[in-house]
Amino acid sequence: MPLITEDAASSREVRTPAAVPAERRLETSNAISSLATEPGAWLAALWQKYSPGLLLYARQKSTAAEDLVQTAFLSLACQTEPPRDPVTWLYRVVRNGAVSHWRQEQRRLRREQTAAVERGDWFLPTQEAALDQAELREALARLEDAERELVVLHVWGGLTFTQLGEVLDASSSTAQRQYAAALARLKVILEGKQI
Image 1: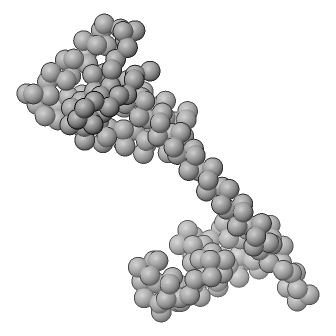
Image 2 (image 1 turned 120 degrees about the vertical axis):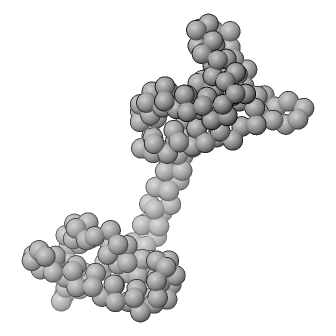
Image 3 (image 1 turned 180 degrees about the vertical axis):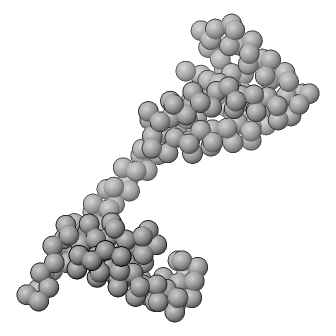
């Protein structure tokens, strides 16, 4: 793994270990030396040659593989001085990004679980409407994404139609009309009639 150090100018520099094969160092140095003649060509060449391998590696580590690879290349493009071994640097950035993404997902899951415990059951069944939670979840899953978003934000998020309009970049009346349509579709699904 490369060592990342801070020099006096506070810029990031990557030192290449001696274990990097000579042919890879030659490829890397050729790619970097072309930087002076063709500003974007070296980055395009790296993308063409290494993005499939980086994507395969990222898919083993995260569900956001494409985003991680693109972010790594964008980070490389933003470097004032390219690292000595850009290929190793890219793999390191993808790996670090996958770890960060995993941590974010874990925090999100913990927040959702805590909120679910604090909120209790989704519904308190009454005599008139004995609605099964599993049945409702299945029905919600069959809604279109936009419809499900409206129902969840209003019913469980507690957002008003004005707030829904702000979230969805629409007027409150449009949000209310779309919400009513989503509820109608949900009712049809729950009654066993598919549209």
